[in-house]
Image (cartoon, rainbow, N blue to C red; front, side, top):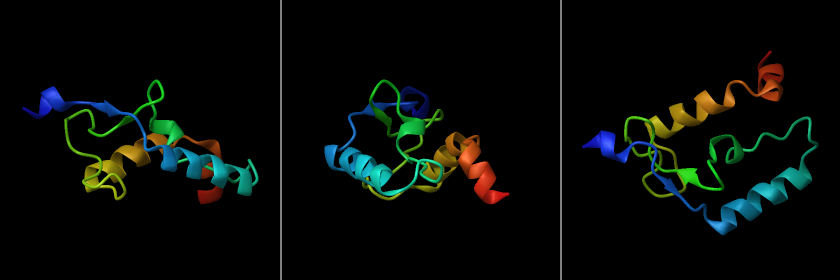
Length: 85
């Protein structure tokens, strides 16, 4: 059953998109890391991972699977690598 739910996408909440753009304008580019853009696919955000597990139960907080999914997509960002040493 989970396999049929693999990588399901949804349109992001416009408020979250606006917050992401606002936050980017407040932080110098060398330090800003979007949490949305690395996981977006064609302007949409996934709500399940490759195994069909929910990434968020309430569209705001990540599940354990969601945290792992996001981390996999963020770990290659050079700014994050630099910040973590």
